[in-house]
Length: 100
Figure (spheres, rainbow, N blue to C red):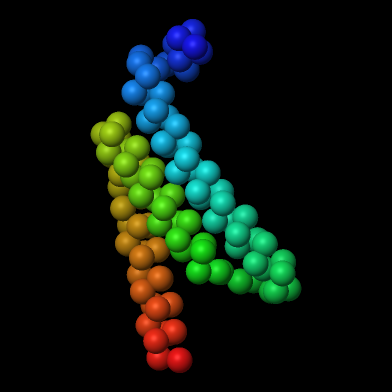
């Protein structure tokens, strides 16, 4: 196990956990595209389901946590605006549903 961690440039088990956190965030982003593709195929037109925005927020927050742990300004600055935009989209969807 240590040899694998060493080969991946990981110094300790905590680093390995954070790599898994980062991968989980990326998998959430992959999941959102799969959900959008599935919904569009089912509808026969381009559709962005509400779950897309939830997956987006989850992925963004997880990757943001990873970026904060690594103190990586590129990841931090890349994820912050998206999190705000994804949340705003959910807010607009809720407002629209409340009006209906």
